[in-house]
Amino acid sequence: MLTKWRRIEIVAFLSALVTAGSLQAQTARPQQVRIAVSTATPHNTPLWVARDKKIFDKYGLDVQLIFVSGGTLATQMLAAGEIQIAAAAPASLVSLIAGGEKIVLFLGISNTSPFTLVGQPNIKKGADLKGKRLGTARFGGSSHTSALIALEHLGLNLKRDNVILLQTGLDPERMAALEAKALDAAMLQRVATKVMVGKGYTPLLNLSRAKIPYQNTVLAAKRDFVSSRSKVGESLTRAIVEGYAYTFNRENKQAVKEVIARNLRLRSADEAEDFYLEALEELDRKPYPTVEGTKTVIKYVGERNPKVASLRAEELIDSSWLKNLESEGFFDRVYGGK
Image (cartoon, rainbow, N blue to C red; front, side, top):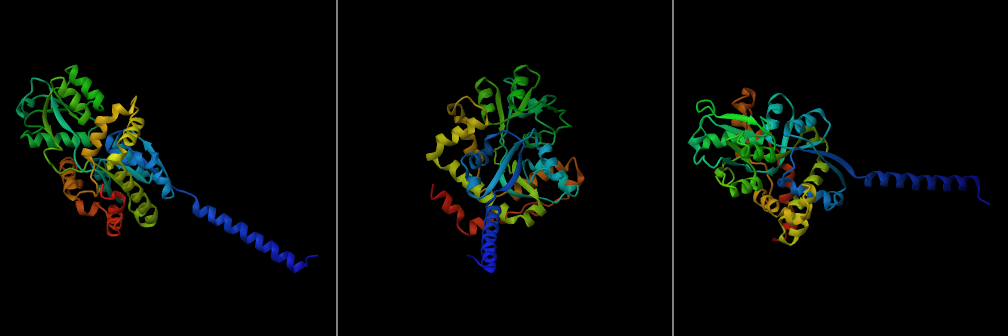
């Protein structure tokens, strides 16, 4: 028969086992991260791959990708604390930062403008846009800023040359407006440009090929998230970089096309070919946010908001997680020479 003290020891031992198991389960519980994604576009492919191929899970993360309409809403959600990270255009972020929000850009999802300025068939050069209507998406967003960049590059001035900017929705809406002659020109992304050029419309300026520095889309977080949840942030960055490596590995082409087709709601992976090529064209293998590209954003947004003009690009960017990964050879490991 067990003595009283022996029974107490056994109970205490079993209690310790239960407690240890509980703590272990808590430790193993995936860390939740909510990311608002402002547009369904191929440059989000590494995020989709990291989720769909369970790479986030591998790093102990439960990542929710929340699609919202427009970068302005995504950045407002970030400022309100409804999400931890926004995948959005810096053009939507810098006004908030200038207003006092403590937000940093830590990963450059798309480091070039994906837009081409496409005109009606009878518009052959930039000067033909004087007094004409140019369609973008939301004012203050990436397509709007890209339109201002394109006009300046072509020697045009919005006010002097009476170019009328109109908010006309996403690529499908802008394409329809061109065909209905409700627009004289529009900012279109790669696949939409290919379709319209095939119909005889004029590509006036491809901003990516023109090598104009522009930070199109970033991952941004509040500074307190970067400081207080650095382990989560670094794990997230590892998973996304691995998503980049998976995307760039040509052996995964079919699987990546299937991911793109699923997230863009295409009928089949075959329809994702052009979007796959767009992703490869737009993504950088080392996705550092660029200082020069961010300076371009500040310049154009600052023309409408003097507070933004006083921002310094270097102070908006925190690449510490990416630098840590590079210093330990993580990029070399995940890319494996491919």
